[in-house]
Image 1: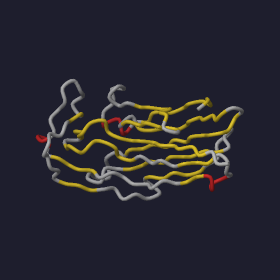
Image 2: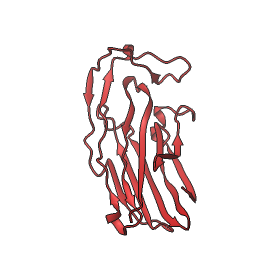
Image 3: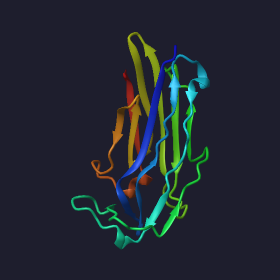
Length: 195
């Protein structure tokens, strides 16, 4: 009998466009790896890896992406019909976006999300989107427990779901963070609890 658990880590900018370092780029989802792990299988064979891809990044003229009232200055909108002046997609590799089955104390199964992806339209000296988050899972009488351990940048937004239920959310706007917080880490720690 299979016990599939669907995991999903969504990383995205909460605005249509973002103003950063004198440039304006597309917002929205940047990546959303969604592996499945079967708690009735043992080891790495229990993990069904997802298709791993980065979303395209578009650059816009600054004047084409006005600020949004009541939002931080970096939070920009894109009026209908606005066209990008440049576009590129970060090519995924194991160093910038990966999902792995790992060992974690107390867990029968654990999945590690590894994200270290940069803006393909910016020089490599600019900060990447970074996250290293491990989700531990185990069956217990009457249900399933999970724990989460890791770090991610202060920007952009991060949402971790298990079986479609959000178990961790980081809202950059609510936290007062800016694109400059790509250079600073936040800790994620959720002790064992019932799913």
